[in-house]
Image (cartoon, helix red, strand yellow):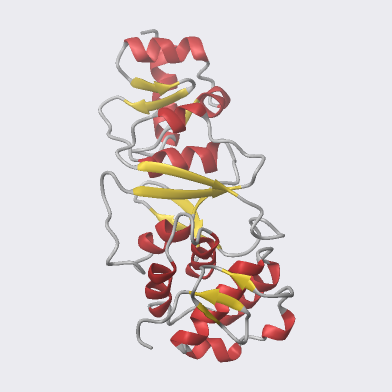
Length: 257
């Protein structure tokens, strides 16, 4: 390896967080073009995990290290959301974590996951949901999670529970959402209000209020439902359930009677 390429890889490694993926567009900005990356592969500095995507040789990169590359290097409006975001923030202790679980990412309908991210074996199942659930898209309800050498963007609990409700009944269950809502005792009413007003799904808004009022959280009293567009007419989540008289949506009957 030439002295130039040797010093170049050292410069790159200083900017490249441990346990993350580096993608070619970012590497090229650092002066490491494809030909040079091939040289680094041959000399065992890096390992290619897909087209235009690399990890440091010897590192075991988790899916969050790939998400970091999507967010920080490719600048894609994709984030960890729904039940996965709740789990990462400690609101779902009863949910399984580790290998083989399904993690949910959210993005806009016109944003696609890169092929390398979809095809790489992350030891988890990646489910990518594309939706315009909020009118202002990524303006409200996102935060960051420190993963050690890097951070990733994910939904706040206020937004994450609404994203989970969006997936009912096809991919998530009403019963599990109710269980999660019971633990959300410290939601911020201002953010909840902003998200409800910004939300495009009548089903999500009605379900959120039904569950929140059922759980009788203190923050519910600080909301102003009159400012939220709940739509008109009755909605049905399940057949043969019970109709909530306030929000006119049929939900599974309460097992508590």
